[in-house]
Length: 204
Image 1 (cartoon, one colour):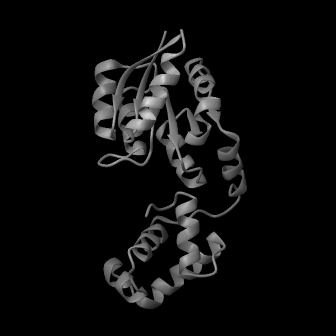
Image 2 (tube, one colour):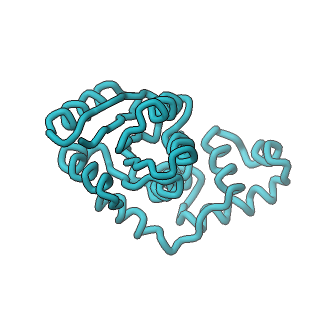
């Protein structure tokens, strides 16, 4: 029997997972959590075979929860369930220790098969996610400072305000901006933000 823990802040999605898992003779849902902190606590208590983890949640997000669980239980088998196929977010989740990355739109088609595959020791990426990673594989990643600047742009700051926040001159901010545009293939600030959100570099 494959013991499954479902972690998502949307009760309707957890109900859907419960129905899918409950219909299988070789699986049982042993717990549900609505955020990362609950997930870590429940994992300690139940030690499930498979954990289904959302990424965008209040409090502790999914990637931090994966890291916390894998820090204590290195053999934990975690499947990410998300609406976001952004390559940067996928890479962060895999580095944190996720074994599979599945879009919520594919749950009915792929969830049960993915649970069995990961339980058997395999890793899985849905085709859309694999395509997103392949598309950007050869591109230069944004530096941590460039990501900070992108977040400050998203918060509505001007170049001058960004410079004040990060203790740099406005000219240095503009230089970083040119690098960001070049790396993302963006035409302007708005385009850079749209790409950053789509790829999972920043959250809005």
